[in-house]
Image (cartoon, rainbow, N blue to C red):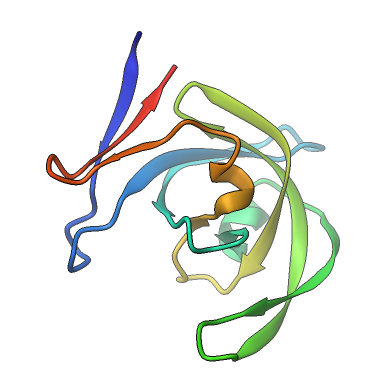
Length: 129
């Protein structure tokens, strides 16, 4: 079995698990990336900066609300995209568009569709094919 491995991002303390993600516009077929995305099992959904969504001509399919840890919430647009994570193609993923410069975050709506191993001692994220 082949594994795709990604070193943790040491800009965070403690280092953060990450993976590379290719974005695909489901209607346009345009691609962007790969982009480094934080692996966050504490996030219900996936957050993608709007400048990256614009690169694939992603169309909004609705709106939603994002709530942060201290009850702050914000209205966001929801987009339908295709994600490629390692060898995995994930069509029809709903993501929240967040301000440019914000971290790309893979939440549980994506992580629950993958087998992801966080190898903390080695500071590596691992995905089998």
